[in-house]
Length: 340
Image (cartoon, one colour):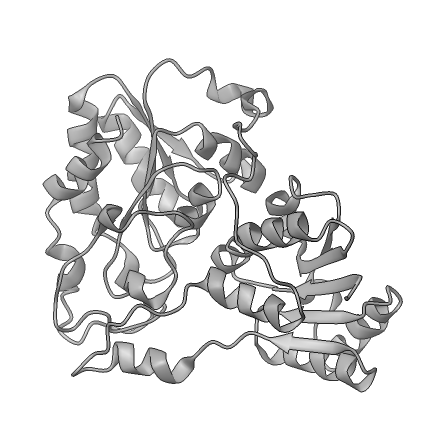
């Protein structure tokens, strides 16, 4: 049995978040084994509450390991820790190079299978194969199974059986009414519910009764949300002030999170908060649904062109993003309201 195992996943934030239920379950099942999670230093809050046999190792690739020979320098740092096995949960060029060095040193390495051929059948223009694919959680688990670790994924929340400490974000105040989280943005247009339709949902929630709507926005997105805060009494902006740790704490106290297929969907899922998610160019059957999220809480349209993309990057072939514009705000409102 391996006793000192390196786990690697550098990005993106949603994918790193999805490692948490798997690593928690793994570490709980093998308390005598030391696991080290190598990832971006900014993702530390995801791993603060994991079992004691999990160590977080954060790096800044752009700053400290950028350019020719960077992975060799990183490997030289890592080999001092005497790992006897490596789980590559990322499967990109950087992690492949690291894995190569560890194999040269006769270390056991297992790499994630992204099943790209199957994904092409899912997103092709005609005769789409909509068979549900393995989830990211299952793919991560398969890598660890390859190293000889057999376990079941058993996870509730990043905060265990409780919730995050609201005193750490005291300016939010105490909870005295239903709290709703809304994350209306995503990395790509094919995953964003049009803002004029999202505003309709927000207006309905604002009129339905006393509540607080925490809308998550960053950078240039903030301007739009500031307009909503002026129009709707219940809307409040959540921006970079909270940071990942503060956002996780806040999410754990929400009655429900309304999100796109985005990192906020995955973060809220880690806090055992119900998530209503809106899907456009992407599709839950690709395996990227939030942990524990219910199928009936995935709002989507059954269109022959869906899904057209795994990550939502492709331009709409019709140019109108009908997969999103066709979703009735009343449907979204109803899904959210049932949790209030």
